[in-house]
Length: 255
Figure 1 (cartoon, rainbow, N blue to C red):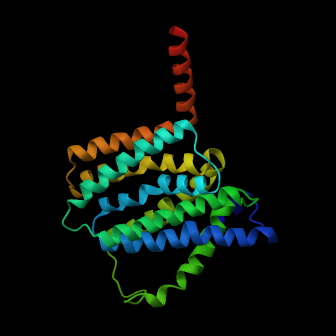
Figure 2: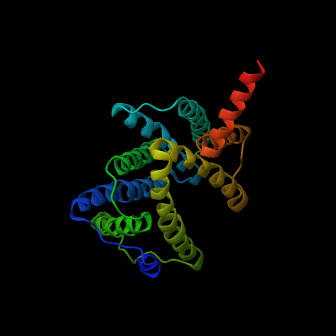
Figure 3: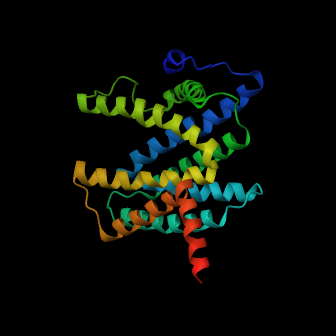
């Protein structure tokens, strides 16, 4: 909200858009964050969180059920990404801490995100993405607070060292606030399926970071799967699609 006020971005919500805003906030903020956090606790492995990136699959299924079929290039990207995600999940399943229930819960988080993405695209709210993000996060925080009584421990009982506090601040301002604003802006450009494919660039960052920061092992299967995910993510970018079309046209011209 402070960012919007400094940059003179209107945060006014029309009455007809308020219900849409609450629904989008519940799916993309509340359901996603609660389910994914509890799944990570169950999985006990950050790399197992890659299950969350089944989003393009769920998004495609939802759009298909609603009568919107993916383009040929998206079908190829989805097929490539499905193999890549399956490879990473298979690799993570070899970890002794891998938990099937946690994987199912994380899939539920991915499904909620996909539903929210399709909903936002089909029921858009007439306001800038920064203002939309501010309202979505504020409403989401209020709804998440309703789940606090379900916790086993009190809100302030856990002690945080400076590293944990720094991680929380990074996740709040960068991972949630900034990236959510980028996501809602991206939805208007590439649509639900295309935007979900772009997110496939995240697992390679997570796996490489876990390797560099916490010494996690990276297998040959991991590397092959990450290459597939990067190819799927890149294929959804407009500049890459233009390049592919021009390359295809050049090849056809030669023959």
